[in-house]
Image (tube, rainbow, N blue to C red; front, side, top):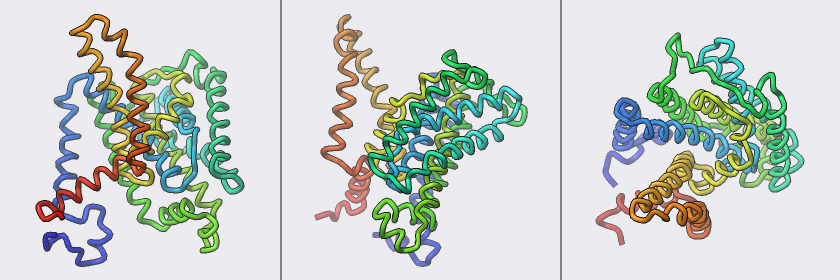
Length: 346
């Protein structure tokens, strides 16, 4: 260990990025994100936008499930509430810096209502309760024509930022990247506060946490509200990006997608959220690219290999659960330890 890696004060110990190397890597990453929309192509920009939205939504679910132990199968419903709230407000000319917080707050309000039973039920019973809410909200999305447009969906005007329409993928990429960075930093700081430590205590042993004076209902509702807020903002950004949304997007399959992302990435870890979202977003794209490449050699490749994509994807997820239950974040930690000790490892 280098001499400047030692923590010499409490402020150093509490810093998010305590070493100079970490801060330099972070700066390089932020510069790359800022420059990429200027040089990236249409497909790459679209993938960047979708990945950023997935990271925000998965981060909210990781706060609820990974850090507080509240299993939720209704995350897609919270996203739908945020999407339709932003769409309704945007149609009335409100700018994006108003619609995004409003979408998050509306989803957080629903999260508090859904979280009320969490004091009495937990585990699979709570998951079933959120699953019921998921189906109920999808029904409302389909039937409330005046707000959601029913099964036809709703058109979302371009996001407006001080009179500048964010009507291109590059502009949306900057907005989504900014929101993702801010909300990830917020999530990481949350776990350094009393609230975040209370979440962890509830996850590990809620009875012991209550004995220590933690108000279970208050902190569980807070966790639901924060996680739902993240989902609402992600849903609003999703609507702005696609410009038209239907209830068919916010189904149970999307909720399971985010649950798989935080399990593969690593429960309770901000870095695990990012890695899991990257895995769940990019691996299907790589599999599709492989099928397209094989089609150049054999005309029947698409017909034969397309059904196998989902099988391979599912096997990869199962493989992580069996061989690396702590997720991709644990793989990353082992790689860091290897290079940190190299060449003096035993």
